Image (cartoon, rainbow, N blue to C red; front, side, top):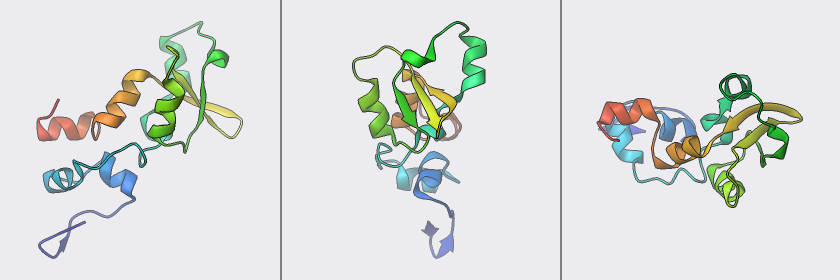
Length: 120
């Protein structure tokens, strides 16, 4: 992304949309839908961290997504269930996407950028 002929940020579309370098970039990408850009890996909570806070839950009854599945796929998986989504990388269970995390991923660029811009 360039501003006035000066390079402001370089990265993949997902990196730029989810972690804008400054307010200019945040405003530039603010209207872009995250549904087909942001992946499960970007919004998930590590599985072990989730298990520590939520002991005893059987993750094998949950919908399953791949780490590289986009938010749009996660939305479809979450319809009709109250369970979080289990994220796998190959056969390895690596993370969990809760509905809150999914909605935050769709809504904006994450807590860091939202706080920087004063958004809620």
